[in-house]
Amino acid sequence: MLKRQQQGIEADMEHARRRTGTGISLTRRGLVIAGLGASAVLAGLAGGKIEKAHGFSALQQQGQPDWRFCGKCNGMFFSGRDGTYYRQNQRCPGSGLHEPMGYNFVLPHDVPASATAQPDWRFCGKCNGMFFSGRDGTYYRQNQRCPASGLHEPMGYNFVLPHQGIVPDGSAPLNPTEQQILDQVNAIHRESCGTTLQVDPRLVGVARRHADDLSRHPGPPGLWEKGDANRQGHIGSDGSDAATRISREVGRVGTENAYVRYYIGSAPAPEFQHALDYWRNSPGHNATMRNCSYRTTGVGVAVGKGFVPAGQPNAGAPATLHYFIQTFAQ
Image (cartoon, rainbow, N blue to C red; front, top):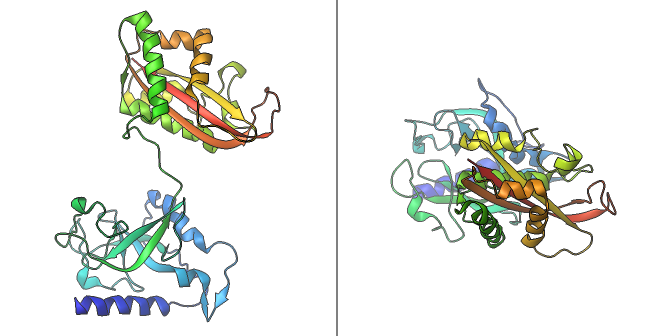
């Protein structure tokens, strides 16, 4: 343990010895894995003007370089300046030592957490990897698997990693609003078909991701406004339509109902009844809910800041928008 504490001090000293300037060195060794690009937001902290203080950049004082992607296990590990730091401790799940590739990541640490930055990511003194420890070091402890053996051993900085919010998927249970939509639509479906639609988590994921996609592209003009005037809200930012999104996820024919409600000024929590009333009174949407060839469904709701859609009163005015999506598949 004393040796590891000494190594931890050496890690801090190594960090302090980094050269002046931005502290960013985007290097490449061989093929850079395409998927690494999404994590470049970490290195993006170097963008813009960086103030110097005592010979070190502001970034260097709050970010540690030399975190690398491993080409053997796809994990993140600390390599040190020359790639050999803590080499004696490296344990790659792939076998042997980690293989650094691609970017030199600079990870922020010991800075305030926020709605878009999660703390409690730690360096493991046994395997050199990055793992999530939780506030008291025990979160997900039952799931920890250190490649060296047993549990991870947190050391050094408390890394605070930026993120863009939770990626919607279908793994979480329906929230109350989504459940109310399902219950109401199933009552309508039962009137016509005598059966209810079964929730498919994959379709929930499709619905949630599309609702989230709409909320992230408010315009003006917003993503909701793409497509024919009478079929707005069904085009994704990747150009996909509902049938394509459903087919590529579950391999079956499907469609969706979509509804947006906007509020200028203060807005309440999403109110599902507005969506249900609209769908029930729209011949096309009502026919979808009563189509007995559909057996499975998913629901997603998202909220975002944006602008009143074109063709509506006060079009273009800043507003809060509530997006309601229900997917259906055979």
